[in-house]
Length: 339
Image (cartoon, rainbow, N blue to C red):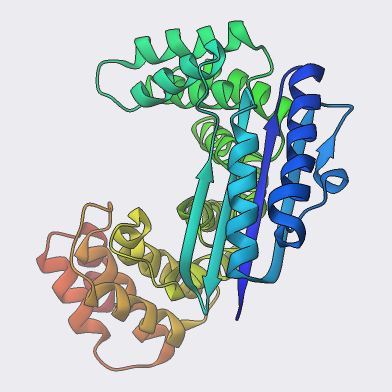
């Protein structure tokens, strides 16, 4: 039986010697253990000029045995690398059967410093330690794109936005395939109010990730919001419609942003004069439980009322009155105008 496989990633082996060793072992294992079960020929994925293994994105229908054999061999190769990662999915009708995240875990100094630093990035009060370890990884191997990306993330958490931008640029200069680096740099652009640059980086984060990853949808959501700020409502509608139609699993952080997304989708539709669709979007937002997403019930009611009014529907005054009763000053002002 065939399933859909998605495999992408990049490994940096650091030195010609390590590169030669891993290519030799790859070919040996293909010949002696796996034969025809491997999805990639060595010459298609190994680059002698850069000492790298690079799979931009493979998508194909494969047997489960071939997927497992290929993942096993790639995981073996990972341990020769000093930097990088490979992500592999086997999917059946949208359901993930297998997922493998393969990253170096050897005893190389740069690898161990990176692992320690990465584990501390989001630990409250330990960001300085994270930066020390990640900087140590970079000192050991100055082309460590992932260490630059994680150090940039740490700087962002510490509100050192200039340092974050510097490290995101460094990371992407070394490896332009890391979606989290584009996503992080886009957020710095938002802080700097450089909205067009933010849109461009969110777009790259979407392209460099796959729809099975949370970052893909975080990028779509924030890209949609940025389009609204730019008054590019059709583009916002495109992104937010996709987000609102997506069914997120409970463990996916994107699920908690569904109410926010429906509301902002409604705003974009309302601004684009798609009034009846806007009403439906606001209805969907109201049907979801209130969460800490920055959206007030009164905002949704007021805008649903406006959409009803513009589309000639009954009940718009009731919505605006209810919003006003919740303390919404804009709704109170609208009521006075209606009277």
